[in-house]
Amino acid sequence: MERELALEIVRVTELGALSSARWIGRGDKNAADDAATTAIRSMFDSVSIDGTVVIGEGEMDEAPMLYIGEQVGNRNGPSVDVAVDPLEGTEVVACGLHNAQSVIAIADRGSLLHAPDIYMEKLACGPELAGRLSLEDPAETTLRKASLITGKALSELTVMVLDRKRHDQLLATLRGLGVRVKLIGHGDVAGAIAAALPDSDVDLYMGSGGAPEGVLAAAALKCLGGELQGKLLPEGPFELQRCLMMGIENPTRVLSMEDMVGTGDVIFAATGVTSGEFLSGVRFIGKERAETHSVIMRAQSRTIRYIRSIHFLPGKEIPQVTASRPDAAFI
Ligand SMILES: O=P(O)(O)OC[C@H]1O[C@](O)(COP(=O)(O)O)[C@@H](O)[C@@H]1O
Image (cartoon, rainbow, N blue to C red; front, side, top):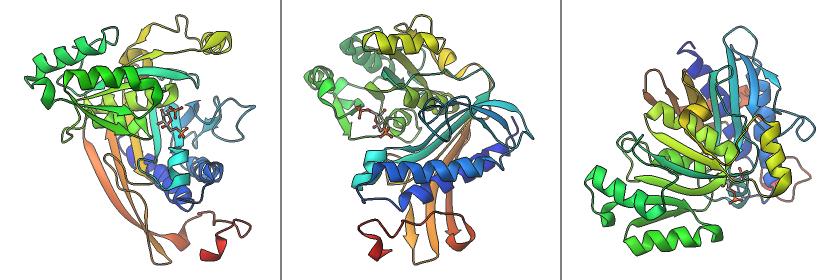
């Protein structure tokens, strides 16, 4: 993949973020998601790829746009798989909370795992720990190994975890060991990435979240030299069947980076919608301008590029919040 493609991709996440940011704090997560999806779908038409969505807004019968199998791009470029979450953190935007992003990863055709929309157990870490931990180990063993490898005392390790009831047992173990726990309300793509950024204070990301988000995070971690191991958690025969239909033969085995993102090049881009672990959110400046913060990374070079953009809004197709919404009077 040409490196210039990274810049084309980040333009797409920027527009997704700008469009959904109009909906911050308006209590309407579907409208926020629709705005990002519509913007990203239209912007993809100008991107120089022959892309197929493998992770998107759902199956063709569930989603009008960015559905699994949809062709995107202007066909004037490489054949790639596309994983896209137009708005990672729909609830976050609806409630005006932290950690929402527009996220896209592209990789050579056939590289990205077709992950069903079910939960996945995740263990993510940075380059120092990559290849040296196992999701099969109990949490305590993982922490003790991490402590030995990094030379940090258990009390100096920081683990990021989604704040969910289902993680009570994990949290009890971590607290019992004396490690520092950073809880996040939503947005585990950013959470997993935090474990691998060179300037981050997070050592590990642990716990379960969405499987599609797991693949997106794995794409980012590949660009950072980190690792994400995942284990799908199908609940009941329907979800199990869904895994099989998506070509995952043994749905409960541990999935490696290679299983999730292949061995070739990957480009990952994200733009903050609300401020989070490593990206600031959209800031509207007066009536005509808005500022965005994005990251673009490429596995081949492992450069991490942060882009701050000041957009001139009249020149962009950003859907307005419609007058029928309760707070439209303030727009
Ligand atoms: O809220 P749950 O059911 O625990 O699911 C966790 C998932 O939800 C998120 O926090 C937000 O997902 P959405 O964008 O679908 O709202 C993900 O980052 C995470 O993987």
